Image 1 (cartoon, rainbow, N blue to C red):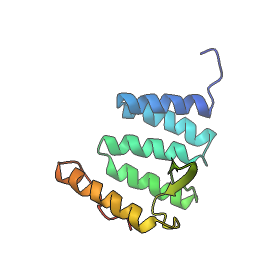
Image 2 (cartoon, rainbow, N blue to C red):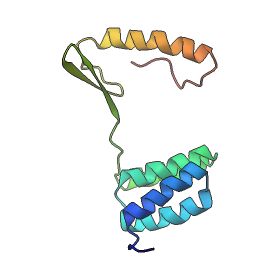
Image 3 (cartoon, rainbow, N blue to C red):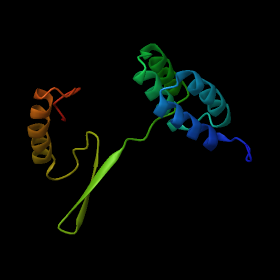
Length: 127
């Protein structure tokens, strides 16, 4: 390879392993990444997703315990929407928005029929 392998290169390889479902190569990449960049939450999340997709739930649990033990936390994802030239940000479980109750009620009205049509829903309750 014409460049030195660093955490970014290994993370790209790990993402490719996820795409192709190759857990064995993913474990090799993860070993290198955890040595090069042990505090980056994305490394653990990506590897956890690989294990979860292949049914290795004990390994997922082990990774989460490792993250907790090393005080590594994933920042929550967020979404935003622009309405009438005003941008509204939403974080999972956020109830700070002045219209939070009506927003969650609208989401609930969408989730219930989706689940009824066979899609897997962890919970239909947002609050």
